[in-house]
Amino acid sequence: MEYPQFVGHIFELTSIDLSKYKEKQMKRRIDALIANSGFSGYQDFFEGIKSDKELYDTFVSYITINVSEFFRNNDQWELLNKEVYPYILKNLSKKPVIWSAACSTGQEPYSLVMSLSKHVPLSDIKIYATDLDNVVLSKAIKGEYTLRELKDVDKGYLDKFFDKIDKNTYRVKDEIKKCITFKQHNLLKDSYFKDCDMIVCRNVLIYFTEEAKKDIFIKFRESLKEGGVLFIGSTEQIIRAREIGYETWKTFFYRKDGK
Image (cartoon, rainbow, N blue to C red; front, top):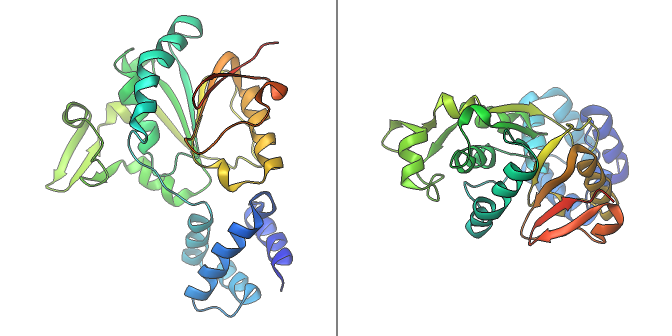
């Protein structure tokens, strides 16, 4: 079996369209996984993930490239607090609806709730947090993190919003979890949320083809309210943003252009 055939079979099995990812990068990652797992090639590996649920989950987690941190790129979170949240609360909604797309193990949506709690009551916060990978969503829902994972969480937040489980582990309090709805979601296939005040999708689309990225940015725009905000990663940008209906607002922040 050659790589293009493997891509087709994977789509039939998982609904994950590998053809939308940058081929050179993705093929290299999959080839390494196959070799490290002791399989002889694409056919052998595909038969393996069809029959072995643990291997299937490992494959999905591996290709979705799950990397997440609390308050990643802190200067962007400072901008969020000083300018973006006040803009949303003044111009869009006093009870903001935010979508954390490709949320991985949950650090991002929990960071959103904690930072937004400085501006509005927890009862007024609604976050949708989605990812393709059910394994990382399970960790996100559980909400348990080590001190190493919590290194960038302010002590005030740690004391207020986490329960200490043991000397090295903390769990997010239920009052924070109640603000978030976790759900499996495929950005390339599934329907998108509507009437979002802000969408956060950071350091994920760099792995997609330019065509796939453009399609996703267009769908994100359709999901936002007029004037809604899209927050992307520090390694990303929207090429010809105005042509697909975005105003370049601040570094890494775009607004839906109503024109």
